[in-house]
Image (cartoon, rainbow, N blue to C red):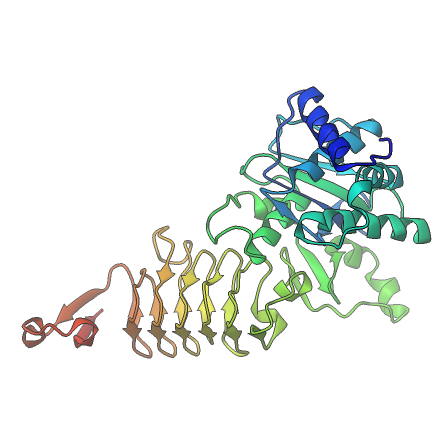
Length: 358
């Protein structure tokens, strides 16, 4: 693309792209990612790191990316739910030419895509990064996931609170993500370790393996809010969402992907996938909130505000505000709850004394 000199010319270019590109439609989400590839299968994506994701926003930048790809002979198929394309230095140069009217402005939320393109262009000039190491991903429909790149983009959207928990389609994520060994934040193919185990160990180059999983840890990709504390990196999986003020203690705590908190919460127990905990609540030591695959009959659990789950308790039902499950109790969908007759005569709100019958 030629150098664009004015904002009016920039807007005219965007209109031209949207009008004259066959089947053009704005993406639901898009972003540029650095991709880590396999050690044996060098075309296999293992991880995608996005410095910035766009979710239902910044459509002008998306249009420019589409045109810059076309100039490199890559046509985006808008009929697909997700599209992943390699980018190169020519792609970046073309984008920078179009962003010229905004290049001298401070980097605000509307112009962070310029910062990404500019920083990557400078990096490629200085290091000569190979083509294919960086990719641009478009998601056009909230459909089941097919690629590592699109899966990571959606997980970023959840962890950065671009979308509410349980609000987007994550079907296919486990199939799209490979199971890998993680060492210092980098993924390593298990097949590579098996193939070269003898050589690596004899050379004292066998890596320190932190864990083996399809998902990285939350802190490998997300910068939490200042008033959020995570005392053990292994306790929060990437794709979790933590509201400001949340504290995740070490020990029996854990927060799975597509689960988390909506306000300040003390977490000393387990918040399974799809479970949501409201502000001011306390998940006591060893307490467990069941996920949709662990005893809730597919019913996702939401815990209200200012609710206490006592130590080693189990919650398998949704709860409202101000509830208490005492330590060691298990409340599941089949649990019968009885109220003493004399308490039924009172109107004490949450002060009712209950007995739990297993």
